[in-house]
Length: 245
Image (cartoon, rainbow, N blue to C red):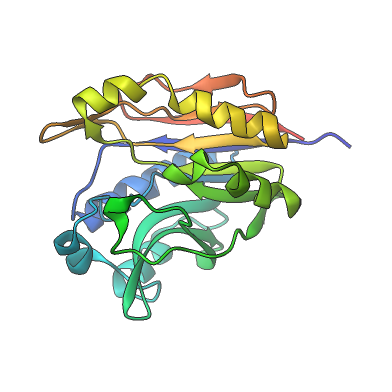
């Protein structure tokens, strides 16, 4: 039986070390996505504290899942909100992970921890599993940014019965590198779709920081790798789209 499920993805500015501002903005977008009938909404990589891969930033702003800031965020979500996929820097067992929390009914019901780390992410512990979750009958798994370059990261999710791959990303890059990659992100993500038959929903940041720039893209791709819907590259917004499985 064919089912159609509405999903949402946030394209946001960075909130670097501004957890309260990030929380308030996320809650507003969750409320908007709920009003639009979405079953799931995803946010960028490291969204809650800002994704800066430096020891100083991570040690200062990392949060455990039971931290007061996290619990306060959960308590402020609307009742019966969509499933939320929230990127954050996690304090975990004396170390740190680049994490996406799965939030349902104001509770963290699971986490995905980035498995493929860039050289500059050596302060993080790599994840070892590709869990699959469910939102209103839609089975989904998560990749975080660089993970999408590795076919096995998507295939592992497909092998567990997922229909949608959620990609939390942060492509805030030096301008020359950002220009080079500007139109390649969806090309790579589309390849993962064609290999696995998965839909792919991405969430990214936009704006500038120091000498860096980010444009996104925040998009929905179908199993053929076609971009079904995409937000403008250089402005914040909320993507609302439908997945048919």
